Image (cartoon, rainbow over all chains, first blue to last red; front, side, top):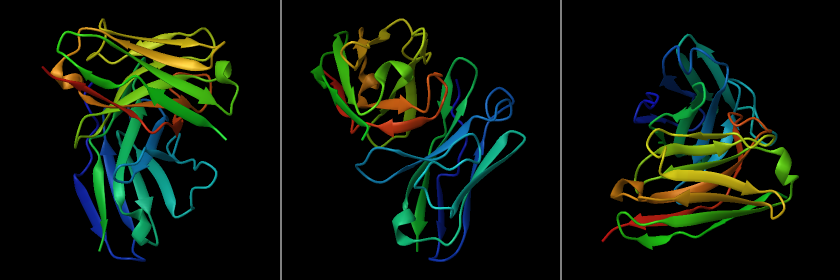
Length: 109
Length: 121
């Protein structure tokens, strides 16, 4: 049950786009279309932003999008806003268990 | 409105036990899978355990298997996590989460605010 690999940090200016990668294996990310992404602000509970690779829950802005290619999933945030600054975690089903990525800190410059 | 309220956290000595509870409201409790996720201080999220919404099938991370037990009382709309043989590395904020549907691997749609467990002598 190894954690998925995410960059420790990414940054971008307001209005720009950023992409956060999430690399796993054929036993998790590559094997199932059950990748989700969570946003967490300091001291707060996580919030579901993307599920089933590319679906958005009601209320999540369409600036947030997800995709997957092979064993790597990606979260893209377009039109960056100050409130997007947070930690982001990917998560994948891995057959009888679930695994998270180590998290990526997004800084809006 | 979905609400999840965790309780039962606190300070416990290594080797000790603790039972966490998560009181739920705002949805048909028995129809949904439920999950515990933890976050050690300054660290990332770690999936701990899930219980399905139908037959109550249970799943555990290797790090807690054999020590933790997840259960649910559908008559009380409450989720539990019995934690035994606690170790220092179990120190974390424990979040209760409601899954998207009855499947244990469905995404975690709603989260509680968490309860802190500290394992220390």
